[in-house]
Image (tube, rainbow, N blue to C red; front, side, top):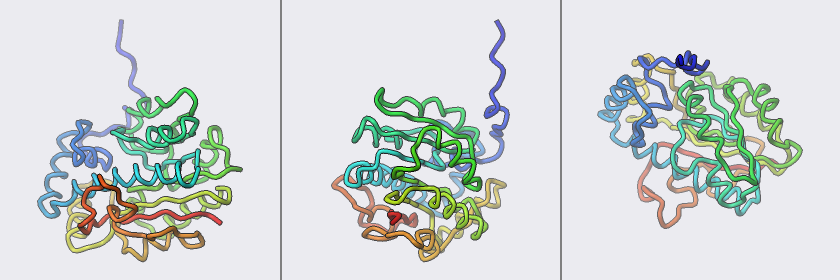
Length: 267
């Protein structure tokens, strides 16, 4: 019996060029990465040893943010754009641990994430998880596809974590976020996390871009905060991720981590 033909995602997969999701996976200690990813990952660590710290801080932020949204805010629908490679405490796992009926739609265009997408679809029997092959720069496509699973007449938590820095054009990035937020019901929430500029981050970004990978564009904290314009930014605002509602187990709460984020509510 012959082997199954490669999927569309597998045909798009180029392991010779570093990929954001795979390098991030390497920094998190995962195994879904290749020599090109590890090479650039190690080179970046040499100029900014805190990169694995940033990766872990973002994973912890995801967990705290989803628990807050599903618990205190009562949100039971999540749209996670820029999913990344599945790891511990994915959005559906956290949300459905709070509310087993929660509905989650993951969105990503990275071939390696698509290969692992079936892992993301194993949620609770009471809830629903789905996956959309799309890019943040196509908000209409995302909203249309996600509407098959999510009810956009009710509040949705829109998660855009570690993605905006890969859209260098500021106008395009702002327009994409605005279009997605416009498609949400009042009472919805927007969560953003993004790398921000600093001398060491700037050097790391330059090294990343020179490797031929998907270009990265760092923004200042005020520029990241501007994505929340028109929304009710929740305390403590846009802060270094470990400083956003830290708990007893939050790592690096006493340090400055150059990955900032926050959550805002749509009036």
